[in-house]
Length: 136
Image 1 (cartoon, one colour):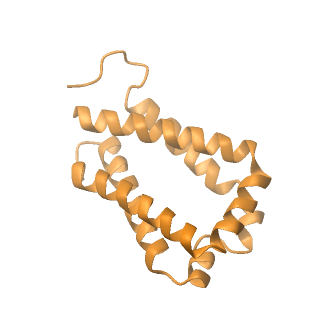
Image 2: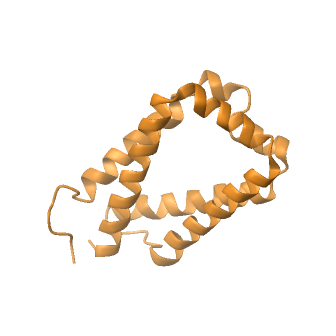
């Protein structure tokens, strides 16, 4: 496994885990933030730019579709970030709200952080985070 895959697996794993735990701990704040965000086109545009930048960074540096689950999942996370960022930049506000869950977002709230938490923990485990020496 390449050192880039190991690094990105660790980075994305830690990020996903921390964000998921924060979402679980602050449910009401997160729901309110999403509603507020979707009412502010400038904020949606900024989030889209960040998503596109992060997604492009991963896709351009790690577009790996073989070699096991970890490299493929890291690549998929990069593509997913890029696609979500593009949707934030180009979808009309109403369509974006529907895509992100709209009225059902509150009802099915814990689905998203649960998926992020499982993904994060898997990436941490698969990238050998506890291994003191990264793969070279």
